[in-house]
Length: 187
Length: 448
Figure 1: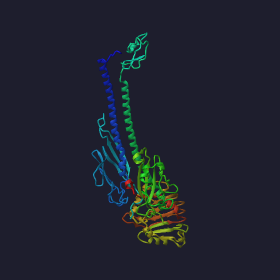
Figure 2: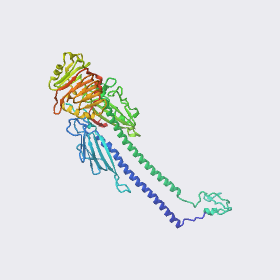
Figure 3: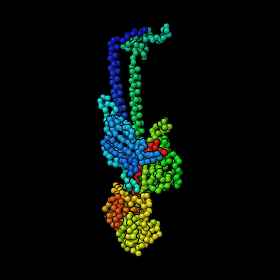
Figure 4: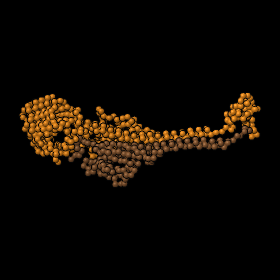
């Protein structure tokens, strides 16, 4: 039988120390990766919200003001805290019916807390986009409305200690405010 | 060499070192003095370790992390791509409406509504106002997508093919239809709907959709084709009175198969008399058209009965028109121009020319199209100046709620010519953009 030398205490201690060092190095690297991955996820989520913003806002803003020339309401009103959009989009026959009682025919947009909120008709404000810390109309000269939107990550970035903020400038052409050479209404 | 022990297990017999230094001792392997010679020791019994396991675990860990990152980035790319495709389909649909707006002034609406085969197939097809049904656009192969039927599809030179306009990465399809207030195949109010469908192909098959899921946006616009200045005569005069200087017997006002001079009275009926009084007996045959000499007729009733033409009696119509003209006529080329201070002209021009103030056409000056003189001075045609198409003259005060007519001032002398030409009038009318009455985005739940 071969002689069994066994493992001495020194060898055990040495191997433990080496294992611990290696393990620590590995864990540190994994933790770094986890932080990086987590931050990447937060940034991607924030950017995804900003990417959705033109689609979500555009469907309401670009079609604002689809009203009869003698309607007694304004198609798009800009206030310091809100944008109000009124657009006669459809009626029972599938065509505009000179009323604003349909879905999303009268909407309001505002920023409240961390959310960009939307209200349809007389309902309550609902969150449209989360973690929006800035929403501002920078210019409204028909037919062009320009907005500034600021989004932040939903949590602080690891190793940074604060939320990352990204700003976008959006411009929407409000087609119903396009100028006509001839008067819209007829007697 | 090997032998089996009592339990049948193979025993390992270490090699015997014959000469030289103790490699076995250096290697840590026991000596086999009986077996003779050195043997290879691939797996020494007392040599054990976890290097391989560690390497495998590391590899597995790194591979997992890389795969997780790849999946995350891939999903993000797909999500971004999806948002961009949807946005692009929106842009394509908007462009389709703009294209429709551009070609509408050049289209005959009743021919357009029934299509090239001359008959309207009817409104029994679901979503018959759409180029293609919405759900079909979402799932069809974009390369094979075609508008069905020919109702509402522009035809003729320069029209879109049935497969729509193909841009890089997508396409838009159009269909015109009559406004719901009128029959589907007969237009009289010049109001028309156009639906533009923007389609961007999907990237991956969507099992829930059954096939590829394309990004689709449907936009509808309502337009009115403007025909207020589709003149019924070579020379149309609107007002209650006029100061006419008709010199010599060489000038010509020729309506062709239309009237030579049409009079549109605003409040009183003195304009027709003033013009006829200005015509000497030797000049009567210089004003001709529709087989009449002189060809002069009061068409005020026709204008009041026409839904579009009656706008000329509205002060707000003229105010809006003159205020908006500078924005639509800022190009120096042929097409649509506005001269708010009048002036003199000796060159050629093709299109619609709108003038206010004293305006003289001299020498070989020629306008092919429409000349709209809105008063504020006289219109003078001398020498061999000519207008081939039509002339509108009015001198209205539209500052109040109602128009108030002021006297028209017209001088025609020498060999000046005003000749009605249908083609020139059509071309000039095409310079006026249609009036947009509405614009909306349509979603599947809104479609009928």
